Length: 265
Image (cartoon, rainbow, N blue to C red; front, side, top):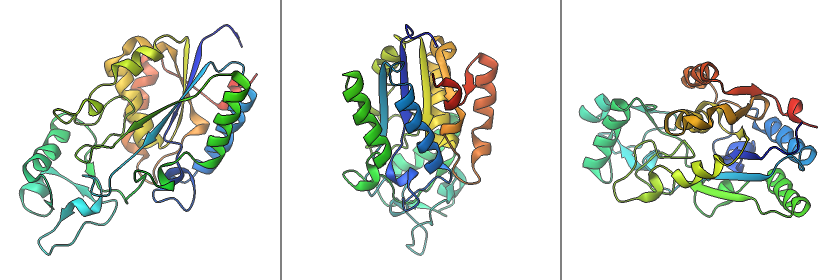
């Protein structure tokens, strides 16, 4: 490996709620993904020039959490319930808050070809253990900082309760007047300074896939630099099919797919 290359490792949402079996939204396979990721950070520490770790962070009454919605009986939807624009129009599911905005939001997701609105278990709640980096990754990043004499960078996403924020770079539907939901051009510009961008994290089906889609859409010049670490990401159970078209398009455009083992010196 050419040690003169500028390489950033982008770790997406390697947090307790996704990566630990006790987590609120555990992604099966994430434990093993994390083990391989930690090994890579240790073995390739001299090659990795910078690390960016994203942190999914939500409020309790988030638009994608059960407590935001109710049916005609006043009951909240169960986690993993999809909500369509038709459901909103016919009153199957009614927003408890910001009613007009939430209704339009669901329509906008469909109009803009984003993932259909979906209800998740309450997860990565701001300030809780579930929102923290899983312990082994936190240790690995700390050790990398001491060895490299560089600080790692964290980027939070998802704090606005009226916007799902799968992708690293932009909320699914930006909220007017909320810059943090808009395109993070600064981060894209930082990544553009690299020769390679290694991407790992959870979940392959959602936050990783959407981040990749956003790179292809908003920063196509980065596409030849992107390397997806396929053994350091897993799908939300049963939902990998949602992301398959994104990965197929990425391959056509020249995104590279490899494993952490193949990148180790």
